[in-house]
Image: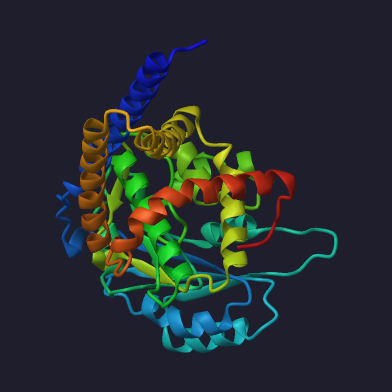
Length: 375
């Protein structure tokens, strides 16, 4: 039987280990992103031509609103390719109307096959094959750039050493708890993948704002290794092809994109379920680093509460907790400001506690009843 003194010592050591792990992430990983400055100075003359590729499935209304914001980018040489993926709405008519005004717009389409069903990856592959330029910029039909400098900002990172540029794809600011939850998650995920990339361990990007070379795509045989998964056209592709030297980031406001967030909790849950189908295929190092942060955070909070209840080394425990929280909130505040994510800072502490449990419940649910859907 373990004596109370031994139990106390074990709990304190476990709490301190979790605190050390958490501080490592905040002080040595995430803080690196906040010190990042864009040192690229490409002039307009040196900007290469780019191809913007967008997949659209019954996105007529979104194309009508957002496509002009892409077609009217301040960029010297670019084309926009929209893949109409079996749409049954007015997508084709809208594209034809836009072509009369914008000569840089091209489109292709896929027809529904009775004996063959496909997902977004096939549509995206068709669009990439139709692109004439080496550099691709990917976004979704329900996304829009917040400025007309989007392409220029991304292209400043194009050089002989870079094959992938990661951008920030946020969500529109609206009222409600769910909106704050979604925007908090997108900001923290971006903080993570930007930070890891700067540490030489790039592991993902988001298809709402992602750029890479077409040669990288074809040399990797596209999405062949995970073609059977509905998801993964963005994060798994980056996970497979990114190295410590071929990735750059563009996190600043001029290069942001926004999209309409889910307005129903069930729809957001479905989106997260699709993410978990790809996470299991991440490289071991990436799963280890991401999992270690989550588990150390959960046990940090759990042990803190346990130590307070039994009044064990109250002053020391509380001091460590407050120090970690202050460092975390400083990093979060700067991150939200950089991403222009308003009205989520005050509630971010609550989200930080509950998110691991939300993810765990979704992960378990996904294993019991996985869902598939074109996205």
